Image 1 (cartoon, rainbow, N blue to C red):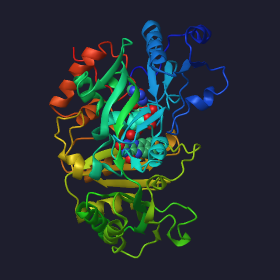
Image 2 (image 1 turned 60 degrees about the vertical axis):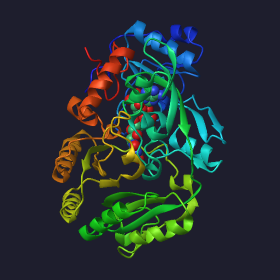
Image 3 (image 1 turned 180 degrees about the vertical axis):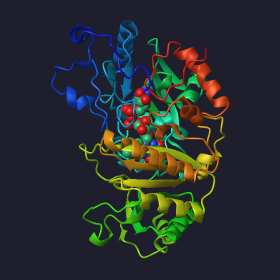
Image 4 (image 1 turned 135 degrees about the horizontal axis):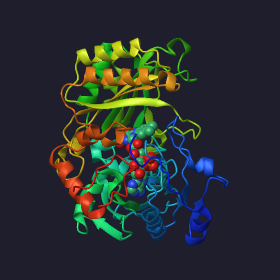
Length: 459
Ligand SMILES: Cc1cc2nc3c(=O)[nH]c(=O)nc-3n(C[C@H](O)[C@H](O)[C@H](O)COP(=O)(O)OP(=O)(O)OC[C@H]3O[C@@H](n4cnc5c(N)ncnc54)[C@H](O)[C@@H]3O)c2cc1C
């Protein structure tokens, strides 16, 4: 486990309550347990104090408390990462930063760093506009943006960072900076993929795109190796408007899944065509023609409807390994079926995403996300029950990912858990790492922001 997740220093909650003008919550206060909860099951950390800033000044003060006390500080927005909380340290919980200001003419928005993807998506959809995030509404806009952002609009409009115009950042020494292509361009480069290593973002300035009615939803097909290979071929050949997130997994016992298929391996395709409805309906034929569907929910919908309602009580215990592929073939499909059939994990999945399009046209050194032309991203994941089966599930995911890998050792930082420095470095190949470490040394020489996929300052 990375240093800083636990602490033995102390802080007086009552002193902080007098010192700070925003909410300060200690272990004895109402709401403490709800506020410290994170998305992932099995993570149960108890911060010494939770600070809920209302603006950049509150953030600067909280960073001062961290510097003076020596307590580790965790920054939290959506709480979906491994580092969303701390045992005994300060939890800076940004969820009260939810202002949303849209400029319809320019198609831009300033969004508070405490919003979730679905909150932003719904607010923008009122104007027939969108900025692309991921496949899950409860993910925070901060975490996903700072790590890159890959989702339903990536092929058409690029990664989330490709729609980032600027940000307000509070640095480790408490300075409040406007960061964009002209102001602190080095920092602007680093926060587009380098994660929360460089400061606390309080507001993001995004480009919006005309995305209103789309064709999308879930299509479930039987998971033969042939069908998997065909689905991947269809996703690769699809127009850039169309993104497919392809999950191969046992069919969940949900009411809309016919009983005879529940528990059997299926391909659950999450599909989105962000464009003309007629063209989208035609494009979907490539997937619908693969095999008779078990479930077909693909239809014209408003973009936010693509996100199923989030259950706040859903905290899965899952272990995963992410990987990149340069191509996909029938042998890879066989490996997937083989591994999924061999495991007895209560839930297990291979997720594949065909990338490319607008994302791949951005030069590799334009942002801190350098894997621009890698065409396929995957994750092998399994649910575990507790310590008794964690090791077994972790080994299975590692072996599964290795069996699929073809020599590309790169990773997407947002899909990492606590996997060690080599994996973080793999997210930032070659010169990217050196440049990030130099920028870190400039803006956070003491590594105050270390509870993350950490890039230590270059000595
Ligand atoms: C179910 C699920 C689905 C996902 N789907 C996708 C997907 O489709 N596409 C994709 O690209 N990713 C996806 N992810 C990965 C997700 O983008 C990362 O886990 C991301 O870090 C989550 O952001 P968060 O704000 O929810 O998490 P948090 O844990 O709150 O924050 C993540 C990291 O960012 C730092 N941080 C948060 N806010 C700030 C801030 N304002 N300033 C500075 N640092 C900050 C935190 O310290 C932490 O290190 C998914 C994750 C899960 C669990």
